[in-house]
Image (tube, rainbow, N blue to C red; front, side):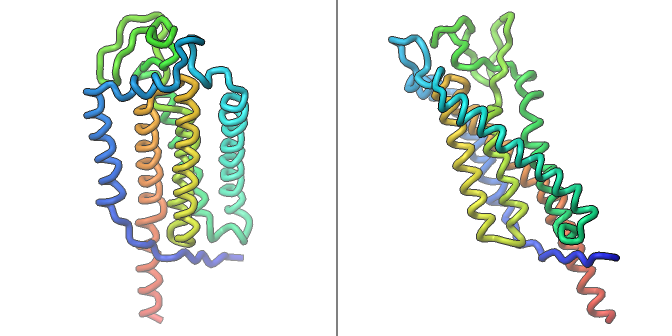
Length: 247
């Protein structure tokens, strides 16, 4: 039995806003390379007396807010994949197959880009630097990397991406449930920010690492939405209109 797939027409997408804010944020981060903001903020979370970051050995930050929270997001991603696959067979899910596909694509891309970029950029973590009791030499993102036997793996922020990847929910919901989509955006932004601050408290990342991660995750989710949901939806609407006229 064939299923009638009814999808709402896409709500207008303000590209000046959707792309402009990330662009301004990226330019600001590049300009901040001329300052010591990252180092100054990291100093706030470092205890010279203890010779370590204040959250480095926190059970809550490491075991709950890092390990367990990451497992919850991974479980959500797995269920998303299962839902997408089930949408090929279950009539109830077929109308949402494209949205589920967009969700899976966004979650996959917004997390898988992190590890390769860490390897390419080789940025050191704060806890590895001489200024914070480590042995590595500090270098900014656009600086030349000093020689070392242990290249850094700290840019962009992996745990921040675990939270910011949920921007995907905003785009998946924006056409069907605009109000819920806004709530999803607030949740994703808040969760990514909490994850970011927690890792800064542990000395795992600088401030700019996490902001760059948010920018990348937003752009990836935006791009996935545009190519999977936004333009095809316009075609579906045009097709429905033409069929209505011919009828």
